Amino acid sequence: MRRFSFCRFGGLCKYGGVPKRKIIVNIAMSVDGYIARTDGNLDWLTSRRAPKGFYGLPKFSHSVDAKILGRKTFDLSVKMGASFSRDDVHYVFSRQPPPASVPVSVQFVTESIRGFAERLHKQAGKNIWMMGGGEIIGSFLDEAAIDEFIITVVPTFIGEGVPLIAPRHRAVTLRLRGVQQFPDGVVQLHYEVQQSKV
Ligand SMILES: NC(=O)c1ccc[n+]([C@@H]2O[C@H](COP(=O)([O-])OP(=O)(O)OC[C@H]3O[C@@H](n4cnc5c(N)ncnc54)[C@H](OP(=O)(O)O)[C@@H]3O)[C@@H](O)[C@H]2O)c1
Image (cartoon, rainbow, N blue to C red; front, side, top):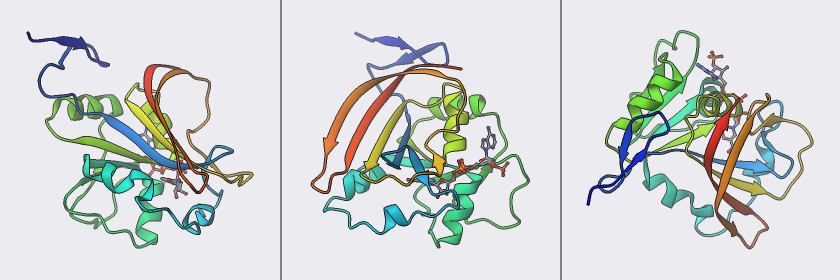
């Protein structure tokens, strides 16, 4: 029997056949809710020795074929010497004109978030990794365009910094899908967005 469910964006999604692509935030956060120091420094994260399996990140990377980045995260990634693999499409959101030259797998997006997310959800493919930072996560969340959050909570307080989600009044309910504890005190929370309202 063919079964259908209602999509987040209206209409019908088939779930008896090909599963719907999801937009999933996968990000590391300090216990006090920050993803970077105010100046972008990630020393509290990069100075740690990750356990074998790297908190499931390599496995997660294989489950996606596209990544979404805010322009500031893109700029910092470039500065830190990140390579943008040709295996994945990297969508960078910005309200400004793109730089003259970007790596081949990078596309600057000017489309509305709602239109973009609807288009990607309809396309066949693997899941999509919302890499952050906090501003672009907030923008997507406010358009009900995030399906899940995987938050790797690092056992440290950094006191101030870039919040996981750019602040504003929200009413977002989450369903806990799983919790994983690692030997170094890191805890990974996996949530599904049930309802997102601003
Ligand atoms: N801990 C982690 O795992 C992790 C992961 C990712 C990032 N980070 C950190 O997060 C920090 C950056 O986060 P952030 O919140 O400051 O910035 P961000 O979300 O990376 O980028 C913000 C930029 O994205 C664009 N943008 C945001 N909303 C948009 C919308 N609705 N439409 C079009 N463009 C939009 C704008 O670019 P324009 O200004 O060009 O218009 C905006 O300035 C960095 O320090 C990075 O290292 C940490």
